[in-house]
Image (cartoon, rainbow over all chains, first blue to last red; front, side, top):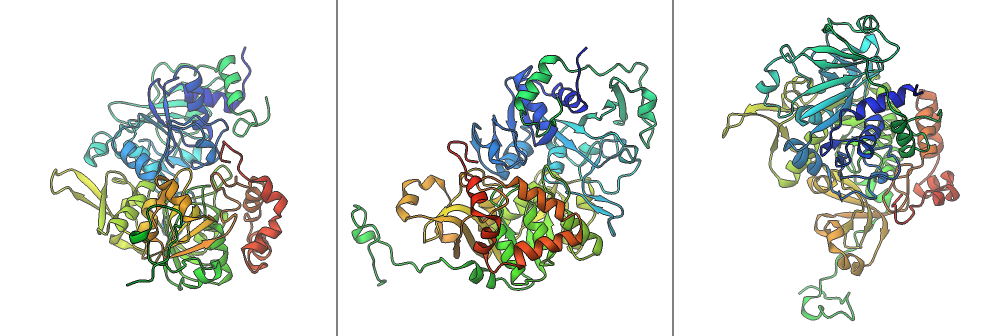
Length: 256
Length: 320
């Protein structure tokens, strides 16, 4: 049996959602490592883009910032924000983007701005960055979050980025060009969206967790299909490659 | 007829076409910051860890500027410094945090205190607001933000924050973002000649638009080079001199952030900053030691230590 850490598991899981030949918004952290892993395994022809302006990036060290010089060396072009968020993203050229969030609701709408009331926020979070633009325009959106009941809420404190908004037809109403969220990856499970209602639906459960564990940790009614398979585990090869990509454990940690 | 000086002796294209003498745009950091008045708006250059105008932020704090508004996409410890020291009262931004390290602690505290107001936009929205300002048109249309609280909620801008309309040509919904033309644009670059022709290595972020949207542009450069160096590689000139009002030349302007091809970020210092700012006392200690406790940028660099700074110098060909 393959031994793996939680971070290794989630990185491999995220990598499985990147398809060969796609234009991918990588960002930093686990999504970046997942995109790099995909490129080294099943998706060698992806075009990795950082919103700061790096196009077709091949970083030799993992970047900490979307503008990190580590993204520069080996990329095909280094331009700017209007290029990546305008000409590329808003023009509909990004296939898949990754976002994290502090809160998500049952339609996959995301909050990365405030906890508490808007008028008197308890905690100021980073804000949208390019998040709203990515959620509005990427053909597919993959959301990665730690699974905590307080994060899966009936009503967001603030809606930073659009998921499926109020359900069927609402992205179309606002003319959003992207397809919206396709999958949510947490440390317990993967969720997708019911095509009829656009509501979040359990898809697979990670090894060591049950459907009830997931249901106990969301604050809305989660659609549970009849069959909920287990999420595939990472392979030895995937784990070896991700450590080659992050030899200093910047994202994977030192423990291996 | 203007006085003609030959700055290109030995080159063929002089004689009739030599330029008139330009007045030297190079001033000190203290002089540059003195021009900023309380209440002014600043476009703030750099993106994420790259080319952050930290030394300018320090001097704004030392000169006790108040009630400034910052316009930028995403800035990190430069905003933390200015917000922590009560230099800013308003921010129109898309992002503030220390990437890879965590939340912006000073911003979090000042928001909770009610000391600052933030109008939230996205990166595309802010970049387009700068493009609109640079083009001298009142707004630009985008196709994001719609349906979310970025459109539905606003602070001091009220209904002047964003507007969603039906396109007069196609009927499609579009979101209009108001252009920005602040008093100053502050942009940090790698090198500049004394006329102000500025070259940027690596990504430009939103600095092409941002440098052209302010009423006055102050360029901060790591290095001043001869005009021939610029004219030898004009395609690297991101900002032609005609936009530039003043130049400040100093090394390690972005420390502890990075400047492509010149130096890497100082991760140890960044982690120390983030840890100290977790408490107000810790932040005050940092502020007293590294910013208020020194008279100028060189004294700051002395405290950081030249051995440390030297170790951050970029290595060829990597650029970091």
